Length: 336
Image (cartoon, rainbow, N blue to C red; front, side):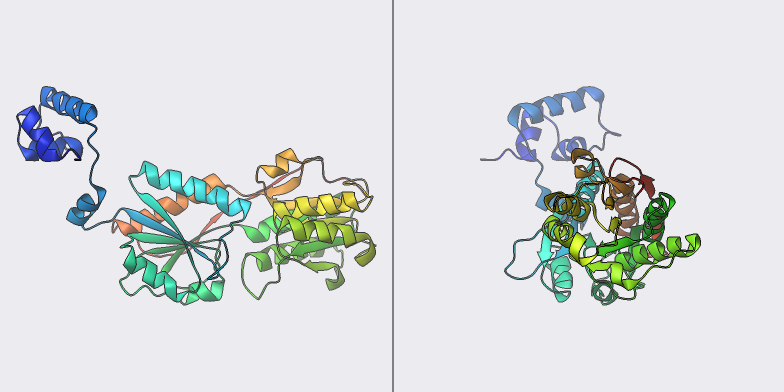
């Protein structure tokens, strides 16, 4: 049978309240000798705190949900960038005594169900369309933080990177090298959202340089390695005048590099490539990828702090936090 606080108290010869105080870190009214004796018994007998009972007593589950969109029958897949954010977010919450519950939801209505079913103290939503985030209205007022969202929902807090500046930096770098036909490769986008912002920054760099950019050089493609390979293979025939590609995700950029190689051309000899994220693979490929670096550590840390401020009653939804980005120049770009 599992060891209980009552068992520890009996062996230590102290009250149940004293053991509870020691186990929960409340040492003000307990002597050093008693603390050491109780800890020794706890370690020897392998006592583990009953998290459910503790949460019930505190009226807090200490659970934060990470909710991502997922269709009903598909296996849930995250982008490499989102996996990195997930890791930093989990570490920050763990250091603060919270647990991260990862769950896919097939429609926005399930967000509210998840909040209530799992008694979540708060939730981070990642990967939803802005119009979906606009509709999030938790019935019990559970705090929600939207990562990488441009939603104007007043009920959510936001943390995102400076996507507009990232797109501008990528295009400005390629233009400074002398490229004049630069393809913009990324998923379809609406009037708002991070891809739109990266595209607007991309156009801003062209305007600043006095270079006209035409929509014929826009490549609408999902941000995956497989679609990048396909795009890279067909680049010479579908966009013969293009000498550089800005891809809105590193994994897509790396796919383009492989597709260009398979078509018998080289990077950066024939085509320069810039990505966005600076995930690990940017360092591993040959040539190493020039990319716009997002500070995923800061994103995870700030997101955790802002959400827990709301959970603990010390904050309220406000203006989104925008994290700076920087261009990292490596070997995948050169003069045309």
